[in-house]
Length: 248
Image (cartoon, rainbow, N blue to C red; front, side, top):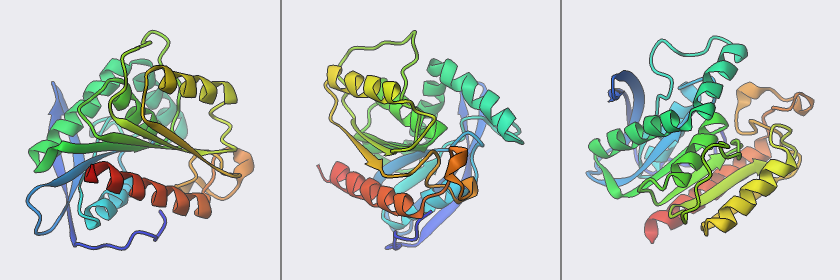
């Protein structure tokens, strides 16, 4: 992650056990000290599952005064051991988006139960988690807004909703991301327009998939690579979006 964010408040992070129906889950809650009720942000992990990357994001958000909760979509013991397992695991949720949505709703409910202001909630996500953030907007969960970092943009073919999207939408996208073809991006823009969403989409020149994640390496020819400049700029844009979101 970029070092741009300077902590304003001391963050206190810990694991939280919660449930989605019969499924036991363990997320990571980070709260600013000395704040009783604050805006809340759910952070959804990429396809490798809840890890130190999203815990760090949660801590940084808490340092800025938000109550942040890194969701656990897969559940304890289901953390993928390699990219093949991650592809299979994430594909299940992307192909069964009602299940994915209930997992996100469970995280939102847990965040609120831990003191977040229910009138000021956002969801952000990375890669697979970016897809989830957009699903939360498509489902019109009671959110102020969502942010997708290099997430998939496609709708599930069997779920073509048409009602106006209420949460505001910010998509932060690598201009050279090979995992999202131009036709998918165009279909997404058409979807947002047809559903009367308040949306923004920002492209970062030369950035490919996973541009915020140092673990992606530095070889963009592989289709996924860290890009320090895109990481810095996308975090700036997300911070500004959240600040504006919760001030209104």
